[in-house]
Image (tube, rainbow, N blue to C red):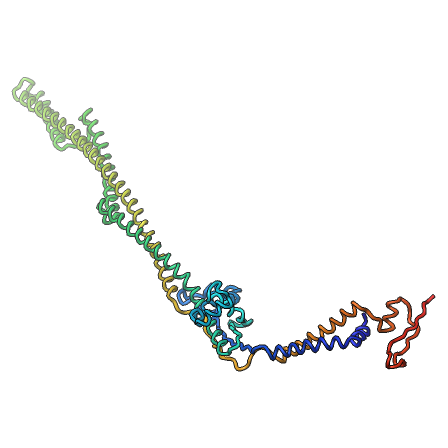
Length: 464
């Protein structure tokens, strides 16, 4: 279809197009004048997404999410907020509202749900693209009622937002409270076990007692080492004194024995001299011989006594070694017991510290959640409250007429084209040539025909 054919169709069917156009425009005009006027009141709220948490002092994580503003819009349009608005406006207690619910809703569901659905149908929530402002609009036949509902939605949204933040905090606070009681019982039980163990073992300062006993153990160990060396020395001296007393250092170094040996040597020299001068039968010689024998006997007795004293010293050292060894074993056992007590006490102390740390952490969380559950602050404020509008928002007469003109023209042209498709006509030479597939040789103008019977005649010749 060419543009010329399209224009010819419009000229031929202008009555249909004009009729449909007139009907559509008239209908739009009548409806715009007959329909009741609707008034739209809008309240704007500011959502401060950059505010910090009053409890923790940091920015709330939920506000950093990309869909935070979309979530706020969903909250405003939710049933929970709408039902709160119904209660705030008192629809659930109004006899007229209850009668309307029974009449229109047939008593199904609840009054709150019924009017919440009605309010949501006329609610329009628009978030700003480049700011944190959300506009809450409501459309109704009464401007004051529209403003009241818009403000009620803003107030209900703020209260609901606060509840959504406080209710989880209350649940967490209750849970942390129960947990804190359990952990406090665990802490008290751990402290009781530690105190009972300290009383049973008489422990005041485990580390100090262990240090003292370790020092005693080290001292006894050093004494045992020293006495073992002394016993080895005394044992060697005893063997020497028992075998050959004359070579024993103890015997040789004894001042008495040295003195007696000097006396024996002098007496032997004197006796030898007297033997040459007086002879062995001389009374003086015999008396000197008797004195010499007495000195030798005394020397021998003194040597045996020195050797015996060396043996006694060895026995004393051996007994001291045995006593020190027994004392060392007893001290070792005591030190091991103290270490076991310290380890057991350390375990009990760690149990107390662990219980205390867990109780402190839960107590801190309990304090935070308790404060959060009692907060009345929110990051949402009413920026501009709704006022009763002066001008109605719908129906818009001019806009409806413009739209009706556009739609009427489209609908009229569409109907004309549809009729042309169902009942096609030849309205030009180009159409005839296209239909027959033959060239048009001549066209008779319709202006030469009588006005009473006006039609177009064609004369065509088929090509050889």
